[in-house]
Amino acid sequence: MVRPRSRSKGASGWQNWKGLLTLLLVLQPLVASALAGAYINRDMWGDWIRRLAQGNPGGGMGRGGLGAIAPREPTVVYYGPGQLSLGDFSIYIYDPVTKITLRTDFRLDSRAECENRQSFDAFVAMYHRLVREQVMTAVRNAPLEELTQSDHRLLKRRILTQVNLMLGQPFLKSVDLKNFSLWESADHMSFLPYQPPQTQQPTTWQ
Image (cartoon, rainbow, N blue to C red; front, top):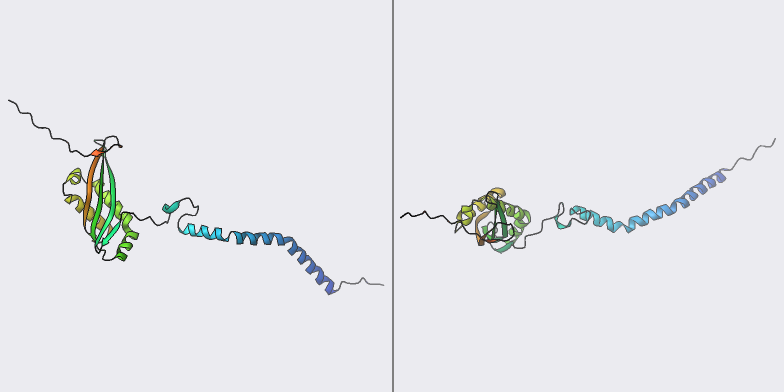
């Protein structure tokens, strides 16, 4: 009786390696394509991550996107130790009773706790937008008497108090409203210099 010849261990091992090589040859294009795509898109992904850190993953939100650093107001100026400008302002105030819109324009200079340029730059980077918002809020909440006062003493005190209250410390020592002007408009478009209402003279009977 002749027994069937059993396959040798060497032949079986060769068959296993042959199948593995065939699989690798089949998968090679897919692997190569994936590696090439990762290499080509490496810079694109890096750029996307950088934009994400800046709050602009889509590239269309610009500098004002979520998480972006607010641009510095160009009129914020460091004059010298303790002397600075908080910028130019143009603030609109609408009176729903008279339906008149007032606009006030000025530059806000200040004495402040900024003894050197480094402390000024740190203040601008952290707080200049918040300070501007507080200044605008203070002006909009001011009664007309403060806006028309010749020396604006009460308005300056209001701005000083509100800004320092927001900062939690007496950072501003004093403020000055440079080139202050007040305008009015009935159609929200054309503005004329504000004219206080004329008081009617009592009629003199003879």
